[in-house]
Length: 238
Image (cartoon, rainbow, N blue to C red):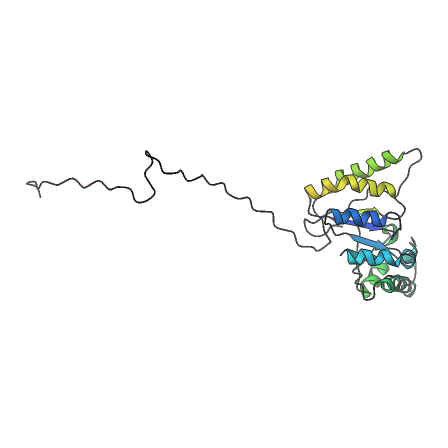
C-alpha cells in the first residue's frame, strides 16, 4: 500500500510508550514532519498525556485494536466492533472528539470483515509498503547491528509514495535508527501524512548578467545613434 502520491508517510505502531514516544515526537518536531501513530487501546488508557501530545503536535491517529489481538480478524463483526469502539473510546478519553481516520490490523492481518467494520466506523484501513522488521530481534544481534539493519532496509526499500512501518513501543533501536534516517529521508523525499498534497519544487532563479557601468568607452543606455541616409542622385532610369 502507498500514500497515492509522491509523499512518504512514517507510521509508528503499538504505543504510546513513555520512554520512546516522547523521543520520536521530539525527532519529528525537529524536522517538522507529521506521522501516523497507531495506538493500542491499553497503552492509550495508561498514557493519556502522550495521546494528547501526539494530537497537539498535529500527527494523525490510527486505531490498532485494544490489546494487539493478532486474531481479531477471525472474530464476529460485533466482537470486532466492540474492540475497535473500546479503543477509540480510550483515545477520546484523552482527547475528546479526536479524529481517528485510520485503522491498522495487528501484524497486518487484515480480513474483509475487519476492513468492513473499520470502514463502518469511518476508519480507512492502513497497510504499509516498507517493513524494516524493527520489532524482530534475532539471537546474537547487537544493538548497533539492529540499528544498522533498520537503517539499511528503510534506505533500500523506500521510494516516493511509500508507507513506512515502525514501532515506538519499547523499541530504542527504532528511535536511534530514525535519528540517523531523518536527514536522509528529508533530503530525498517529501514526508507527510497519506493524502497530503505534494509541495511544488522550489523555483530556481534565472541568473542575469550584471548591467555594465557607463565608462568613457561604453555609451550610456538609450537609442543608438542613427547614421544619416546617403543622398540619392536621380538617374536616367528613374
